[in-house]
Amino acid sequence: MVMLPTDLTPKSTQKIQTRFRKICSDIPVPESLDLIKELRKVEPQSMSGMVPIIWHQAQGFLVRDPYGNQWIDLSSGIVMANTGHAHPVIIQSIQEQLDSPLLFTYAYPSKIRCQFLGRLLKFAPSKLNKALLFSSGTEANECAISLMRRNGLQIAPQKSGIVSLEGNYHGRTLAAKASGGNSTLVDGISRQELHHFQLPNPNSLTFDASLDATGIDPDCIAGVILESIPGMTTIPHPIKYMKALRTWTNKHQILLAVDEIQCGIGRTGKMFAFQHYDITPDLITCGKGLSSSLPISAVIGAEEVMDLAPPGEMSSTFGGNPICAAAAEANLRILEQDGLIKRASSLEQSLRQWISPLIKKHHRVIFQADGRGLFFSLHLRNPQTGQPWVELADKIALECVRQGVLLFLTGRGFIKIVPPLMINQEAFKEAVDVIINVMDEELAKCTNR
Ligand SMILES: Cc1ncc(COP(=O)(O)O)c(C=O)c1O
Image (cartoon, rainbow, N blue to C red; front, side, top):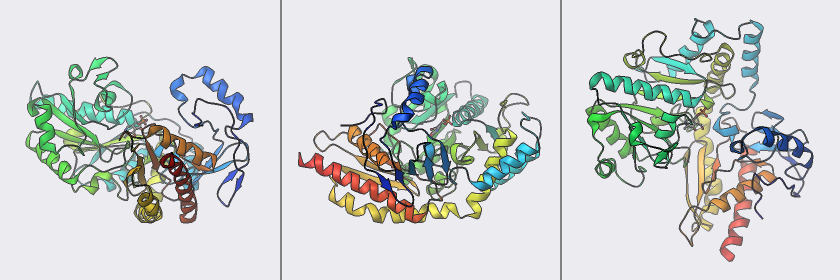
């Protein structure tokens, strides 16, 4: 029986003790239920989609609960801890900032914000020479959308439309929601009313065919926003599509913003995932792995775009907070010093080798296994219906959790493998072997039915 995250009935587990994993209780842990239920009373149900385990400590690629269980983390939280959880260098930087003491500066100049921005901009294409800091990825995307609109409106009064791609995700505020998702309505409002337009999935149509199909008028478009590699699939867009899109945007004075909040900061084996396409965007948004810890996000762009808002019109109370900036500055230092970007690529090659026999054996169900670096997914399809096998993928993910490998439930028929980039090769192999064994067992059951 599938244990849904809403189901809090403890299920017995096989007890496990290896160098990296320890499962010594039923899952969910009976003693954890009071706290989980208390939270469910005070938080909305939107918060209960995760596997019901209590996080107590997270260090490197290991997550522990307070009851003695320990998981190898293949989720990085939510694709966040690129340099690992609670990296000692990040903790030390936070500590030094705490001791300074300076906890808050708003838009007043601070040394740590300047140091962090200098380090961040060194990674960006040279013409993208300014950055603005916020707290969440969603805010960074809102800012990018607003900048694109400001730019478009300087060209023509009707040039305020935003184009995005089906199946991409950009956050949970109105413009971010209008840019992402698949539904035609956004909080009950049509995209057109919000002046947002969506192109079909780039893997289904060429760029020119998409334009023909949607009839988008470039004179009314200020900008395009897309995830360089969508988190909902981890499958890159076709290079040809991205090049055609860049040519079209340049031709029509349309800005291109790439959302690197999930796929950026080294995760795909490049600092930014757009670097897989040999194009340069006008704006880059980042968050999550930017600090691998505290809330900080950024919009990076060229001076002429970033300076479109006059003094005082584009800032945020907590943006570039000194503690968060200290964490992010240390995070980028570690990424570089420990060669984690290259490491993501080399571990991708190992992962591909390990899973190849499983994919060959179950190719009717595992219809796609792809990604870049440590941003990788196994997509399951029900051969009878041809549809994504949502229930089976989530069941497999939950069983892996019960065996000491932390995955999240995608709810979309795929298993997402996104560990911290510093994961030890032996631990990674051990975790992937658990996935392979669980999948092999579950798929054999399904296909023998
Ligand atoms: C691609 C992408 N864009 C934007 C966001 C929103 O970021 P945040 O949750 O920090 O607002 C996310 C978060 O999952 C994301 O994955």
